[in-house]
Image 1 (cartoon, rainbow, N blue to C red):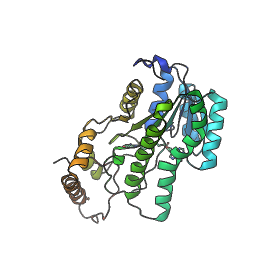
Image 2: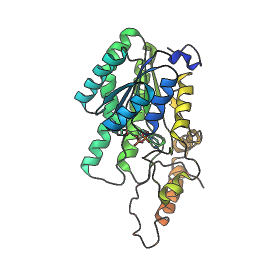
Image 3: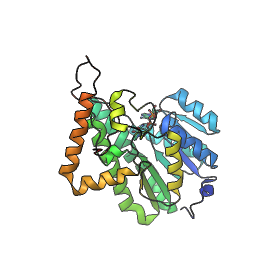
Image 4: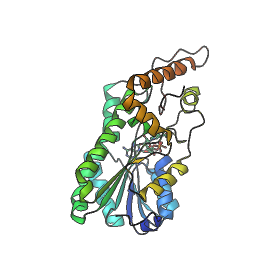
Length: 281
Ligand SMILES: NC(=O)c1ccc[n+]([C@@H]2O[C@H](COP(=O)([O-])OP(=O)(O)OC[C@H]3O[C@@H](n4cnc5c(N)ncnc54)[C@H](O)[C@@H]3O)[C@@H](O)[C@H]2O)c1
């Protein structure tokens, strides 16, 4: 689908970015519009969605990008607005923190995983007929490693990676390209600003615009994993080959988080943090 590493091939491409009212999605929408793509901007926050669409001269499609009916509606509206969809950025995601309620698992599963399954159900028939189409999933380093403090986030991001892999393995030879973005900390509303965030991310936090640049570059070579923090590849390898050593490192990190609770404050049982790195020490 992409003839070269030159982003000029994006000129005129029809793209949908979900969760584009803020953060990484917003930065992607800006970068794609600058490359000349026809951008459909989605977000469940209608004000943010419209603002970004106005900023970039794109099409605002406010609403949920996860529930089955909503995904059907979003993709129909996108086709009306931009014509054929060449790239679908399944970027919207949620992080429910340390909560372990059924409802948190359910919401995380719905937005972080089923949204992608449902989008592919809508997109695949057209893409297979055309012999081309591209899905870019915003998963997370938590989908390759883990995220201390949030079971639902860790598990559902792993599932998002697994689904992306499955689609690539199943349809990759029929013209469907799948790419999986797995960043660690990115300075968005999702990033924790307390000392727990400091322990976990240190100096390694990227701006959303830096992540968007890495994504645009990666569109040029079709690589499956897009890793704006390259060290994630090493952590992922350690997790696979030395799982006990890797888990030991994760526990050490959990201890540091436990000890970083503000003095006088109750020690968090399962603190809410965003992304978990690999072992640092
Ligand atoms: N910020 C990080 O450190 C980080 C790291 C790795 C992965 N991610 C992933 O990046 C993606 C974007 O997150 P972000 O950091 O830009 O956060 P963000 O909160 O700034 O932006 C997420 C946007 O998604 C929207 N959204 C949430 N659920 C939606 C739904 N059902 N339908 C439509 N829109 C919805 C929100 O309204 C919000 O505008 C998420 O999938 C997140 O898990 C973030």
